[in-house]
Amino acid sequence: MRIELSDEIEQLVAAKVASGKYGSTDEVLHQALHLLDLRDTELEALQSDAHLKIEEGWQALRHGVAIDGEEFFSALEGSEKALKRKTELSGE
Image (cartoon, rainbow, N blue to C red; front, side, top):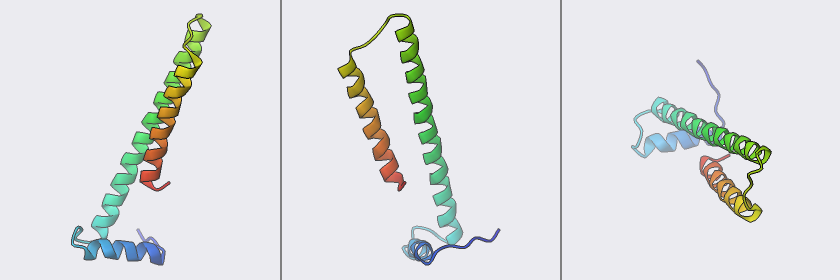
């Protein structure tokens, strides 16, 4: 496989190898792709969990069970902040 990297990315990879933390360009790219895959899996799990919670909420409402709106939005805000931190850490 042949890939083209921007000058900025090539310099970043070269710096990682030069730091001694990685033995080769292949090792840097392998680790980067591994971390990308882990991040994607985590984000998919968070999204799936959010969809399940939404469905549970709809089902509860259909059965006349409800929670306080302030409590709900406070919990939702906390989840949103956690997702935003994960996204910021991953560079998206």
